Image (cartoon, rainbow, N blue to C red; front, side, top):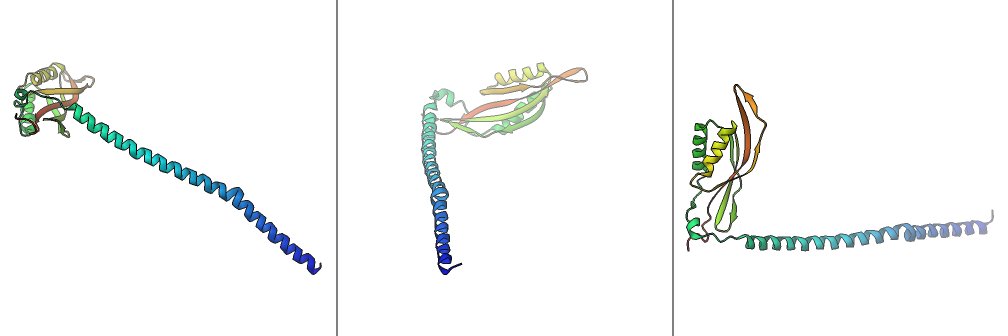
Length: 185
């Protein structure tokens, strides 16, 4: 082996290493970086779109709330109570229902919702009784002096207890009160 050939070998190894580094940088590293940059740009654009869509959604919700405001005649509005009397109502309903033979399993006040000058007061209910007893209780609620809406009513299959068939019933009972804004004109 001559000194010249070992120098040539070192130079060749150097150029081979340089070629491999160049190949790695241009062939593997650079395309990955470009795709990462493209993905990052796409993520930023998507985030911008999400923010603008959220703003549009909020403005649409506000617009819907504005459109949902219902003009309620003052004489009807003044018939609604000003204070929250849910406890007294539930007590009255419980007493009357028990007179009818109904077993109350749940009275759960849900979150109140403001709709203009009126506050909706939903109450989740669960009760058990015979079909005629439940109908009698619903009839009592419909003839009650206060407006009460019953929704989402679900009844179970009748269960035989002794000589009677009991039905478990659940639903949402909604009553209303004045919010205090726009009540008196």
